[in-house]
Image (cartoon, rainbow, N blue to C red; front, side, top):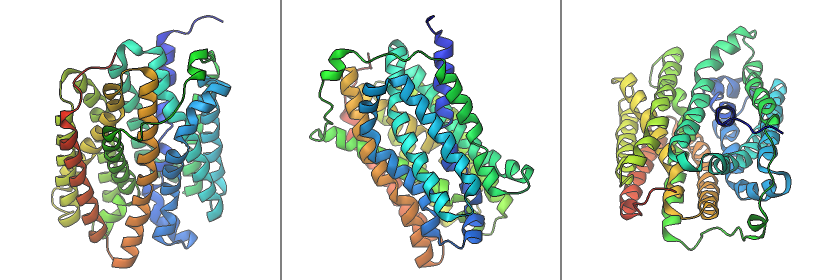
Length: 389
């Protein structure tokens, strides 16, 4: 088989990354309508976001084992196929059980694909990981923003049927699967197969990084689920509320690419993390207490800060661990612990809204979590200064 060009490898990585978020973020502009039509409480409808995130945490440690058995490239191909299948199931999501089941399958596929895409970067782009991680983060941000910005016009085009609007995102997943089928499936080296895959549970810094990742992921998925509803409750029109959330997601595009690039050039990347955490705190405080005061500005700032926090957290294991296998272990622990905790924030936010009667109280808690994220970044500031090899 002919060797694959680096351009095609990068295109495959980008297309896979684009498909990791639309299945989740496309629900946000439609979630109140879906809850009303299916007669679901907010805490129950939030399972459509929470369950994929929980799966992403619980199943992340299984990804390396599957790659050893099937091959890294072919496992990612299968995951893209499962993402497409999960989204096609949403054609029948007028049945709430089908909608929730599709979310579980979606989360399982993303759980396995995510860590393996980091391994893919390590395998083919070892000399320029920071730069390629920037493209990878940008791809995820594009997919997440596309899910938010395009789902309403797509739904309106498809007879205003929200189930078709959700299922539309199976098309880019199928395109990604076809491209990945063209890539050669390389077997893992024998020494990798004999090496223990234990995670660094006894490393204090691994816990700090995992907690930081959990907070930023929890904030992202809570906001992806409830931001539109928060703005709408505050008196803004539904179109204006969706526009604000779309602006937030779009602002994540430059941040997702810029932050890993800056992390390669600053000896202390934790200063960037602290800046993102502080900006997240201020932005969330404004959305909580004054959602109609300069809403466009704060929507842009929260999008920039949270996307930057995610992109930076994805490169942290590269700086903390010395070998590719150690990086994989740190990443697996970060994703496992982080997503298992993050899955609760959409549910608890929806439950708090049901109990309190408005979104101000749950968004006050989210603001406190952003402040805690800033504190964790400050605690990590004395970390290693070496760049990844």
